[in-house]
Length: 241
Image (cartoon, rainbow, N blue to C red; front, side, top):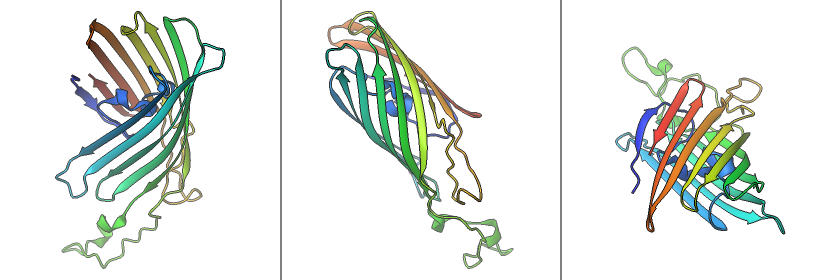
């Protein structure tokens, strides 16, 4: 059973309340860091169903974990897809993510991993649901009046870079502490709908830090406590579960 509580939410990037299952957006260093060889994760969230255009967010990730030949160090790899659509403008973001991590062997108790996620993304919108100030004729909205807005319905493709670091302390096989840190949009990509030359709309860097404690209580029961803090310019988000 998982109990979750949102303490403070103000954010710009894609996010989930069960953040610990959205590995590539939590920290690239968590890619391939699990007990097993292969893993598939699917996240879905919808909000405000009473609105004409509900907010929908979907994330898919496949990642794997392999050891170097004749070596105790390991590496992780994976690929994923993020899709988010919101509001009357149907503003959407589609992103194809590649992910990799490296874990040098230190000891059975201490585990360090570094990760990197290059990705390709694009934003799109639909203007048929938008209303503009210039379309007010003094008495009512008139769709026949031109809003005199000149922008593309799809932005340019842009490269997005993220990196992360994690540390795990294993007291026993089931009792452990995991700390992660990451930074996304390191290259501050331009996501303008007006073209690269005309106007820059840079995506600000998002910082993410999390902690998770797993306690093996009984043979079939573990207690898992998690917390996550994110900041992107003035926007902040704190989650605990």
